Structures are given as C-alpha cells and as structure tokens.
Image (tube, rainbow over all chains, first blue to last red):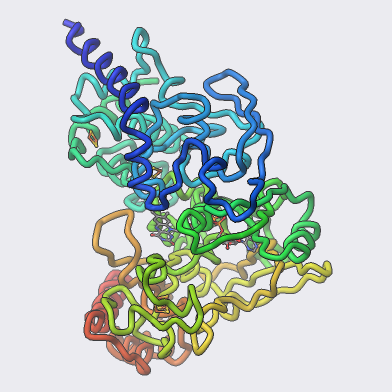
Length: 223
Length: 316
Ligand SMILES: Cc1cc2nc3c(=O)[nH]c(=O)nc-3n(C[C@H](O)[C@H](O)[C@H](O)COP(=O)(O)OP(=O)(O)OC[C@H]3O[C@@H](n4cnc5c(N)ncnc54)[C@H](O)[C@@H]3O)c2cc1C
Ligand code: SF4
Ligand code: FES
Ligand code: FES
C-alpha cells in the first residue's frame, strides 16, 4: 500500500518545518551562526559599522516565479529564501558551508546557499525543496526518501534531497569524483560514488545508509 | 557581518581599478572562503567587487601546448575538463579531493589559490593570531598544533595553506596571470604567489593591493603517471593532514610536492632528484629543515609513508 502513513509523515514534516521557522529558528540560527547577528533583519541589528547599511535590489526566479526583493547587501541567499521569501524548507545548519542543510539548486547546480550572497544571484533561477515536488506530487527523490526512511528528524532532508537530485545530474553529465577509479571513464551511480558525492551533506541522525539506498534506487531507474 | 557596498565589475581592469580605488575593498568570486570569514568578521571588507560577471570562465589551449584556465573556472568544471582529466590528472584528483560537490560548484580557480588558512586560532577571534591581528602573538605555537606546518614556518606563524589544488598547480609549474589597477598585466610562477610567513604572516601572497588574477596557465603536459594522495581524518570532506602530489615517469624520475605541511605548497628540486632512490631519501630532502611541534611530529613519518605508497603504486 502506498502509505497514507507516508503521506501523514510527510505532512507532519512539512508542518514541523513551518513551526520551527515560526518559533525556534531565530534563536537556533543565532546560536549556530556564532555572530549573534539575527538573520531576519541584519539592518535592524545595529551590528553594521555604517549607520546606513547598504541595500540592493535583487530579482530571483525561485521555483519558477520571479521574486523582486530589496535587501541588505549582507543577506545570504539562504536568508533571502527563508526570511524574506518565507521558503523555510531550506534549512540553516552551520551557516558556514560545512553541513549542506542549506543546499539549493541554482542555475542547475547545487550550492550551499549560506555561503552565497543574494545580490550575487540577481537574475538567477533557484530551485528549493518546495520547487522539486509538492506533498500531493512528490519528486521521485522525495518519494524514495520517504520509502527508504532516509531521515529521522528531517532537518537535513531538504538539503539531502536537493543535493541528491543534483548528484545524479552530475553523474549523468560525466563529472568524475574522488572515488572514480578511472578519471577518463564515465562515472557510474554506484553506492560508493553516491556516498562520496553526498559527503557535503551531514546527517546528525545518521540516516546515511537509508539515504544512499534511496538515491541509488532512483539512480538505477531508467530515466 | 559588517555592512559593505557592492558592485559588479564590468572588465578585469575595471575590477582592479575599483578594488584599488576603495579603501577596504575586496574581490569576491565563489565567496565560499570570503563569506565564511566575513561572517566571523575576520574579514570585514567595506566594498565588494563581484568578479563573477567577467568572462574569465573558459579553458583554452595555449600555443605552447598547455592550458590557460580562466580565474573564474569553477573547481567542478576544471576537474571535469576532458583535457585536464587526460593530461593533468594530478590536478583533477587534487580538486576532487577538496571540499564538497556543492562547494566545488562555486569555488573558483583564483579563489581556491587565495583561500586563507584553516588554523583554528586564526578562526577564533578571541585567540591571539599574528596573521589575523599582527603583533598579537601566535595561539598555535604553544597551543594545539596537530594540523599545523612542520616546515618553512616561523616564530610568528606555523599555519598551513589549505588548498589541494594549489599543490597540483605547484607540481605542474603553473603560471598566474594578473592585471593591476593601472592596467598593467604580468605573470608570475605559482611558486612565487604564496609567501612563507616570516615576520609578516598577514602578508600571504606576492599580489599588490587591487591586483586581480585573470588566469592560471599550465605548461605542456608532462606525461607520466599522476597521483594526488591525500591523508585526512575522514575519507571525504576534510582538509589534508598531509598530501602528496606526484608525477612519476617510466624511468622512475618525476616530480613531487607536498600539501598540509607548510604555509605554501612544498616542493624542492633536490628532493625530486632522489625519486629513483625511493621514498626515504625524497622525504628526507623535502623535510630536511623540518621543525615539527609535539602535536604534529607524526607528519614526518606520514609524509614518508604516503610517498612510499605512491611510489609503490607508480611501480605497479
Ligand atoms: C567546509 C569547507 C571545506 C573545504 N574543504 C577544502 C578542502 O578539503 N580542500 C581545499 O583545497 N579547499 C577546501 N575548502 C576551501 C575551498 O576550496 C575554498 O573556499 C574555495 O576554493 C575558494 O574559492 P572562491 O572562489 O569561493 O573564493 P572567494 O571566497 O570568493 O575568495 C577567496 C579570496 O580570493 C580573493 N579572490 C577571488 N578571486 C580573485 C581574483 N580573480 N583575483 C584576486 N583575488 C581573488 C578574494 O578576494 C578572497 O580574498 C573548503 C571550504 C569549506 C567551506
Ligand atoms: S599559526 Fe599563524 S594563523 Fe595560526 S594562530 Fe599562529 S599566527 Fe595565527
Ligand atoms: S547551513 Fe549552509 S552548509 Fe550548513
Ligand atoms: S534526519 Fe536528522 S539530521 Fe538528518
């Protein structure tokens, strides 16, 4: 049975994410960023040296929709998505490029949205977890994560899934990895390749083996 | 993060000019190192010159039979380039051993060369650090120095350069091309790009303020078998404790450079002459001036063993 269970769990995860965004995230984000600079409104924090923090107009095409923003230049792509566009599916873990929770796909490539300024992406197309699939019509990778229990708390999951989708594209495009035995051959979507390529996505719950199963299942499917 | 103004540069010369004109300006490329440091206020530029729009993202063949790599070529694209995979495998391997897929998608050739040290005392603004705050002392010297340099260090700083790519570039005798704020261009061997710390660890490169890297050029391919062996605390996504880049020819001669041991990629001609005689004489020559700390003296045998493993593989 394609579980009502699964759907329920996905809904719970989505609701959980929204709740976290509304209540816990600001404190959590401050603690993790270590700067004490609230990501929501850096301009209002008084942390900047200049009395008039610089701003810039930024236009992002997020999940197919053009969004025009006026942002403090310091705003990362991650904070633009979460705090300004309220797309809280993308998560802030470390805010320093170390955990992969903030992974999104920009112009077809996965990046850490915490280590990129929104102003540097003016005009770019961004795909977040919200753009990959919907609770009613999951992206195959989302469905595979559900089917394989590729998470426990779910915090790293949006980043894992965005990363995984891009990883399979990278393998298809012939991009080698550290574990590719023959640099000049086309890489295979093996479990070893997936593990190496997903090493930028940390899961504190240790759901790794199920994550690898979910991804290799999708990789094995004829496109 | 401190507030900064932002502009997109229109041309390399304009970028250099803009960076020189504004006090406290910096270039930003992938941003994966600079933004990390800006969040910690270790770097606090007042103005960012975004060089991403400059058309410096192609890899072209040179008349000399080598490759000219634009400063903005992403680490992913450089590692995946068919010519690099075939003729400069050590460079592909070094790049692929560094950071993560996400980071390599953003990180650029120039930014990678110019990334700053990962010394934990440099990163902790509560600690003394001559590199971050000249004259404040070196927290690592009497601190925990497991990751630090064993050779070429000074009493002021024992940091290592963290780049894997730079070690391969050094091995390949790459040349760095730049444009200065007055529009003058020059090229310098990558060997001369990074400095040893000496008394001024805060001065890390030979670049002048506002000098923009436009490309890195590789000479014609060396042939031989290419290796980049990186030893680290995890199998992936960790900086090198020690790394060995090598090109070994069928007759046993070749080239070797080390990462993770010094303030810059470490390569010594006299050591390469020892290659046909095996790992020990090569390691001895590379590390003749070594002055390890109590926490990192393991790097000396580790270099020799890693070299031995590489040479054994080269013999097949
Ligand atoms: C979690 C993590 C793990 C990592 N692991 C590794 C690893 O294992 N191995 C490794 O080698 N690296 C590693 N890195 C570092 C990564 O490779 C660098 O951050 C990246 O290469 C920097 O490139 P960038 O284009 O993003 O540089 P930026 O951050 O944009 O710039 C870095 C510096 O270069 C200057 N600059 C940029 N372009 C130019 C130019 N054209 N001319 C003059 N100056 C310029 C900038 O002003 C800045 O000072 C890791 C990084 C992170 C965050
Ligand atoms: S080793 Fe260098 S970077 Fe590290 S604390 Fe000492 S001076 Fe600073
Ligand atoms: S939040 Fe971006 S990598 Fe951790
Ligand atoms: S599921 Fe909890 S961090 Fe990965």
